[in-house]
Length: 142
Image 1 (cartoon, rainbow, N blue to C red):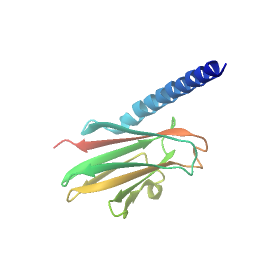
Image 2 (image 1 turned 180 degrees about the horizontal axis):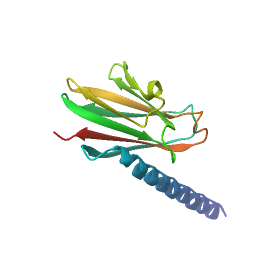
Image 3 (image 1 turned 30 degrees about the vertical axis):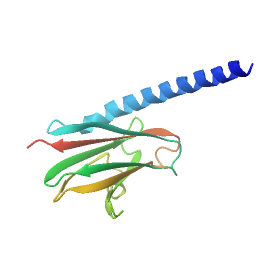
Image 4 (image 1 turned 60 degrees about the vertical axis):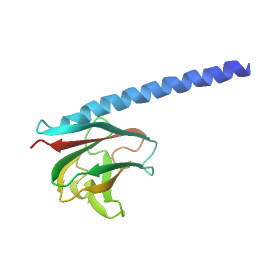
């Protein structure tokens, strides 16, 4: 009996994981529309499941000097559901999209190479439930 219950739990967990992965896939596809043709994706999708608006995800990346970047941040079927902040390695805030009505993307250029932290969380006013956070990074073609 215990083996049957354990097997059932595993099957349910796998089904939920597949459903969440599919949800993240569709959000990532929608988010990719913000990486416009003059930007090239860095080839990665930064993803995280956020269960409520008090949780946040943290992604680490390097931005190379004299390169123009575009960060796209999405959760859900419409823009503006995800709040994202960019910090330098000393946790100094470089950008927050809350200053721009939760804009789904931001273009910027760094003078010198920096290690950065991107923090993402759901906007409680626009997305009170759980959701998949997707961050995409593109760099401008020269």
